[in-house]
Every structure is written in C-alpha cells, then in structure tokens.
Image (cartoon, rainbow, N blue to C red; front, side):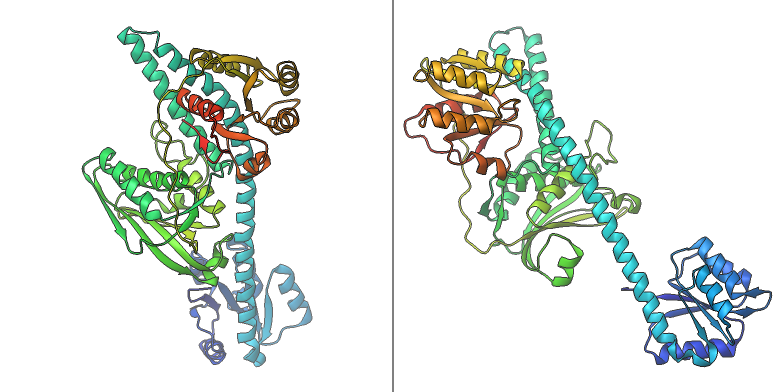
Length: 523
C-alpha cells in the first residue's frame, strides 16, 4: 500500500487509546490513527472507508460487536480487530463469526503490530487479486469481442469490395456532374467503411502486419507533416525527439495508426485550439513496472508520448476509454474503436499504454515499446500507382461470394485479361485439371467452405508447381503468412482493395522476375 493506512480506533478511554498508539509506534508501523469514542462519532467517521478498524469491546451504550456489524454493513471489505480487557471464548467465536479479522486482550497488546501488519497485507493481497480478476475478465471480454469483430469485418469486407470496385468501373462510363458527385460520395463512404473495418480487425488482433526494425522518429516526422496540413491552424504542433536513435520492431503502418489515433483524439479534445506535443524518448522499464503491466518485460524501451492541453478526461471515464465502442463523442465524430485499436497493437508488440489526465488541463498518452537491439532498415516504398493491363491471360478467380466474383471478373476483363470464375475450391481444381496449361494465375479467397484458400493452394501446388497465386484476405496475420510460405503465393490482397491494387498484383504475378509475397496490398 503506497499511501499511509488510515486506522479508525473506537475507544472511549484516553489512557487505553494512548497504549494502542504507543504499541503501534513501537512496532514501527506508520499509520494515520483517527479516534472516535461512541456510536454517533463512529457512524460519522464511516462516511469515508478506513483501511482498518480497531475497536474496544466495552463502550458506553455501545459495544464492539455492534461496531463490527455497522462496519460490515457500510464497508464489508474493511478489516476489524476487536480488543477487550477480558474476552471469553464465546465472545471470540461470535466476533470471528461476524467477520472480525482478529481479536486481542488489552494486557497482551504486544501482538498488535503483528496483527495489524498481517491484516493489512491480507487486504492488499485481496485488492491485487481483485485487480487481477478484473484484468482477466476484461481480457476474456475483449477476446470474445475480438472474435466477433473479426467475423463481422470479414462479412462486411465482402460487401464493401464489390461496391468499391463497381464504383470505379462506373466512373469511366458516367459523365454527368451530378452522377459524378454521387459516385464520389460512394467512394468516400466505402473508404470510410474500410477504415472502420480495419480498426475492427486491429482491435480483434487480426492484423499482425509485417514487422521490421525501424526508428519511430520517421513515423513521427510523417505524422507531423500530415497533422500540419490537416489540423486546424489554432492547434500548435510540436515534436520533441529526446532520443531519436531508438529502434523498435513494428509494422510501419500500424505505428502510424497508433500516432494518428492518439493525435486525432488530442485534436478533438481542443475544440478551441491548443498545443499538441509529440515526444520520443528512451526509458528503462523496471521489474516493478513490468509486474504492473502484464505482458511487458523489464529492460530498455522506446516511449512515444502524445500530450495535449485540452478538456481532459473525466475520472469516471478513464477506466473505460480503452473499451471497444466506448466514446464520449457523437456518432458522427467517432466509433469508439480508436483507443481499442491502439491498445491491441501495442499489447501485441509486448508493450503497454499509460494515460494521465486532468479535467481542464489536458491528457498525455505514453506508449511503451520494447527497444529492438539492432539497426533500423529502410521501410518498403509504395509501388507505382499506374494501371497495368493484361494481354489475354486467363485468370482463375475463386471466391464463394457471387458479387465478389462478378465485380472482380468485370474489372479484370476490362483491363485485357480473360476470367474463369469459380465459387469453391473443388470446382476450381477441376477447371485447372481441364485447362492446366491455359490458366496463367489464380486469385483466391482464404475463407471459403469445402476447401479454404490454404488447402486450395496446396492442391494447386501439387498440380502446377510454377503457377502464381494471389491470395485475398480480410486480415493478414503472421500465422496466415507462415501457412502460405513455400506455396507459390506472390501477393496478398487485403479486402476491400481498389482496382489499382488488383492490377498491380496481377502484373507482378505475371512478370518474369517476380518474387514471393513480401507485403500485402490494400486500398
């Protein structure tokens, strides 16, 4: 217990009260003792829960057992030690049955410090156990919500993908300005929906990303540039790179997502303007700090801080801010997934998030990430944004969603390819057997009935060792990537994706010098 324990002493005799206080001091106990002498003063003192009650048994118009019952009715978790000049066996049994933690005789008070230490230690242990139970329950609840979110995101991605790609097909055929505006609204909405789904998947720990060793200073510089162009001018943005040479093992996109989510929250907390400070520093995580943050390990860490001087967070909301779908914003401003996504990413890296806030003074989020003891590597550059075309090659498209097959087929055909759409893996294999030399590339979904994408890839590899595969998935986890290793997968497409991403994947798959998949393509 970090603060000084508050002990409520119920005793009408000042001499006996002094003896109790002297014994506590003699035992080396640092406690704050508040003395009351009767029932009214005891009831008033119970308006604030003490850490311990020590009570005499015989009191004027009142007794220790009555005091015990009053305490348990008001604060059942607070321990109670009964002190008596002559306590009989029946009284001792009755006191323990009513919930007393211990009982002592006044002529044997030398045991009082030991009893108090033992009782307070038990209280602290129960408190830690409750916190652990709450964490376990919260983790279980988040795990269940994560599975639900992943399943929901998969279905919604299959709904958004045809809309996103059909809009791009229609744009080339529609010329009326009003219709173009409607198509732009469709594109904006589907992209917003894709971002929300990405946050859902991140919250559900479904997107592991490709982790590389990198310096967070680059992510901070990129985010700073974005904020400078998009945030209101009445928000001053400052970066403080205390230690710019720290290296972490992380996915660059996810690291930017962490910073962006925290900065957007800071912006929303300063509607009238203010100051936003991004800080990068290194710190040593002590064993005690690691114990207080399950999943972390002691040692060198890189700490990213986002601080604002905005409205702050109400104390009642601090315990809930990382809960999925919890938000104090309007429905138009937020989904309540931003901080859940941040926490999910950081914890998947073995790190943790600290938050300090005061109403009217602002908030600071500190993200602790393990320092990677190695050199940073260059982050992969984005591929060209052009739209390469095919030369009549046959593309075998496998997806159990009819609308996905239709829109993929229409898009691929428009850009110079031929399409062979199949609804399941076994049908695709039969077509591959019949047209083995004609099929140039396979584009297949992961989640399919009868034969999923991984099993289909294995069967294709038995038939055509050289046939390139492109895998579509809502979330590319490290486990999925490892499962497809060595099966000829040349690219991954993260649903929902745009036409450019699909065409670049096909062009890469059919190029003579292609390499195995190293990054996932998404919108």
